[in-house]
Amino acid sequence: MPESPPSDSKDPYQGEFPEIIEEYLQHGTMKCIAFNRTGTLLAAGCSKGSCVIWDFETKGLAREFHDKDYSASITSVSWSKYGHRLLASATDKSLTLWDVLSGEKISRITLEKTPLHASLQPSCPTPSICLACPLSSAPLLVDLDTGSTRFLPVSVSENSNPSAHNPRNKFADGTPPFTPTAAIFDKHGDLIYVGNSKGEILIVDSKSIQVHAVIPIPGGAVVKDIVLSRDGRYLLTNSNDRVIRVYKNILPVKGSGEEIRNISSNSNDYESHYDKLKVNGASCLILSCELSDFITKTQWKTPCFSGNGQWIVGASANKGEHRLQIWDQAGPLVKILDGPKEAVIDLAWHPAEPTIATVSVTGLVYIWAKEHVENWSAFAPDFEELEENEEYVEREDEFDLNPREEEAEEVSIDEDADIDIETFEKNAMFSDVEDSVDEIVFLPAIPSPDVPDEQPVKCLESSSKLEDSSHSGSPSSMAAVQDGQAIPMASSPMEVNYSAAEDPAELPISKRVRRLSMKGLESLQFEKDKTPATKSKSNGKPAKSSALDDEATEDEEVNIET
Image 1 (cartoon, rainbow, N blue to C red):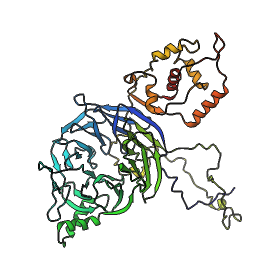
Image 2 (cartoon, rainbow, N blue to C red):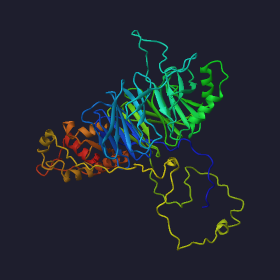
Image 3 (cartoon, one colour):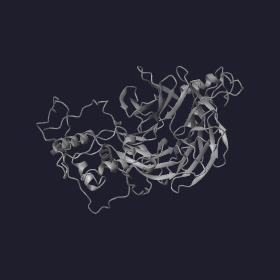
Image 4 (cartoon, rainbow, N blue to C red):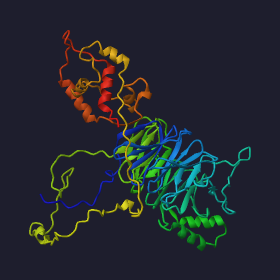
């Protein structure tokens, strides 16, 4: 069969985005997550004050950082550009900087307010400057070496110069009110984008702390989140009006600080300083599209871009709902993902793969991945599988000439030439890495001994009544599972993990659990229907097994501990 011509149309609903929950990670109660730059490591902050690093290739626990003197819950984690340092903010108003390789604490400082989010400056391989966004004060730049801080302006007066504290109202005691203000570095750390409660985006110079531009958001709603794409070309805001707005960044990715200073110096003929900043803002960001759910009017939580910036994901802020919605960058909704009945508190998109990690309110990290359908049909490498019949249009000379004979040319090969096996092609997504920089991509995993599940007392008592069921947990019981004598797995990961032990403290510290697929459960049920009931040796009656025995046997089949 001749090769069909390539189709120019591409199905937008078959994109590279996740579709199902592949597995989940468990270690204490995790609160926040962050991928490193290449996506090989996943950092998570826990409720007991520890930070763990997962090897995302093997899903094994590689590192755990914990200061024994402090146990406050972690609110955010942030990687340095090349993965040498990890910054953690906590509810005890602290910022802690860790060395990833050695596991030693580099520095720790305490702020006046609780930081909800903190990020390291992206321009330095080993940064000491971070951007912190406290709960009830303006964002500030913090020097982790000296402990010095500099507050950022959160608003601009229409009749005066920008001020860091310029509230419209005051509380009864005279203190200015503050809603949590979102702020983020640009790709190289030259500028800081600040979203305030007046519905504005301020572009601030990270060196001079001067506002160079203001972009008013339609509607003037409070900005809750502000996120930049990995390539620095797009920016999104999440506002209280239930709308996610995507902006295109007109400023150059490199040298953005110098460019915006030139724009600011060339615009002087305006009546007020505020009008000048708004004109400057029109030369920096352009509104691309608005994303929302017009039916349910859902409030969004932790929206972000995909690794290539093509997709945008937002989590529903409703309690008891683990729902993600994925949009194309142009605006249309392409996918809705529904998970367990557990609220989402944080999420992160893998930098290079169609994979999303979400943190539920129970402390589990769910891994969403693309569903791969197995196809065992044999095709030629240049053949394309079609879902339905299509009319083939042959070329004019296809059956007159043999283009392969004309294109075939003798190629001279120098068999004595040296083959370069050391140089490798750079990934375009990570092309900004300097050759001289030693980036941390993988960490050696720490092996942990397997902890056997203890058999419940009730299960042992019920099993002792039967001769064939007296050795629950032995290889014979595993063989029974393979013969189809197993019940379907529990509906929730917590039911699976706690079914084999009465005390949750007896469970292993960290687990990576895979679930049986629907096809696997159907095959087990089919084999169970085919297999005749086992008869007892004593009385010839079918043997009975307790629900606890089946549940314990199921745990041995489903759980994979690392």
